[in-house]
Structure formats: C-alpha cells, structure tokens
Length: 139
Ligand SMILES: CC(C)(COP(=O)(O)OP(=O)(O)OC[C@H]1O[C@@H](n2cnc3c(N)ncnc32)[C@H](O)[C@@H]1OP(=O)(O)O)[C@@H](O)C(=O)NCCC(=O)NCCS
Image (cartoon, rainbow, N blue to C red; front, side, top):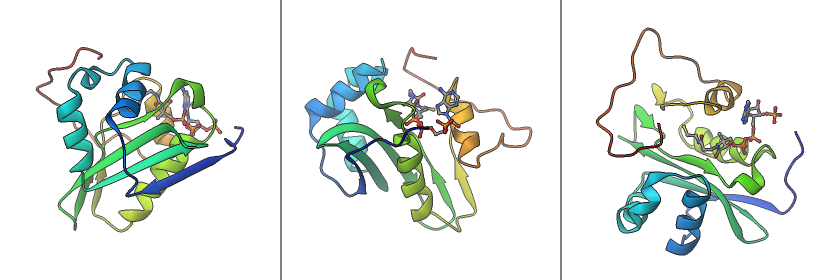
C-alpha cells in the first residue's frame, strides 16, 4: 500500500453539502439523493471522521453510539480517486481509537469492504444475521 501524501484526518471537521454529495455520488451511494437528511445525519453523529487531501474531501466515516458500551459505524467511504492509499485505514483508526475499550464495535460490511474491515481487526459476528429495513438500492 502506498500512503497518500497530503493526507489529514480529523474528528470534528466542518463539512459542506457540495463536497459530501460529490463524495457519495462518486461511490454511487443512494443517500446522495437525500442531501438534507444526509448532512443532518453526519452532523448529528456521535463522531464524524473526515479525510482531506490538500483540502479536498477524500473520505469520511461516522459513528452512532450510546457513549459507553456500543458503537455502530454506519458510513465509511473513500473517493475512488483515493482508494487503496491508506485513507480508509486512517479514518477507521481514528474512530477505533475514540471508542477503544467499548464492549461492542459493530458495522455491516459488504463486498470489498469485508476484507477492509478484516484488515482492521473486525470479524464476522458469531452466527448473527445482519437485518434491516432499507430504502436504498445499492445492495
Ligand atoms: C472500503 C473502503 C472504505 C476502504 O478504504 P481505502 O482507503 O480504499 O482502504 P485502505 O487503502 O486504507 O486499505 C486498508 C486495507 O484494507 C484492505 N482493503 C481495502 N480495500 C480493499 C479491497 N478493495 N479489496 C481487498 N482488500 C481491501 C487491504 O488489506 C488494505 O491494505 P493494503 O492496501 O495494504 O493491502 C473504500 O474502498 C471505499 O470507500 N469503498 C466503497 C464504499 C464502501 O464499500 N464502504 C464500506 C461500506 S460497508
């Protein structure tokens, strides 16, 4: 893996609708079609990690949590221009540091993301079956 140069990851960055929608559209994520709710969701997350490369939004990940025992990571995405350069690892590392010691760190992984999360130490959750009521169309 080549490390991305000019990369800055942070918690508590401010984000703009245009750059967020561009990132979600680049990954064909359906929540790009609900920008008002998407921005409110990200801004009201328990934590929001952003990655910028020379100022440009290259990726983000958010967390929802009870603040003590359980944290769930709903969104993690890196712009295709920057994938496989350590951006996702840096974002997830920042979030995992924040929630280190929690009883459960949870997420739903799909496709190539499964190997990404395995590389971050996640494993299939016993014999559980991920379940949802989902309005999106990309799975
Ligand atoms: C999954 C995703 C977040 C990974 O981010 P990334 O910045 O590309 O990943 P990194 O470069 O930090 O990769 C870290 C490690 O994860 C694993 N990994 C990442 N992408 C992978 C892929 N496509 N296939 C297999 N392993 C992968 C590798 O072990 C990698 O280490 P290496 O490059 O040294 O081999 C990113 O590819 C993405 O946004 N994909 C589309 C959206 C998505 O699927 N998000 C997850 C939702 S559940």
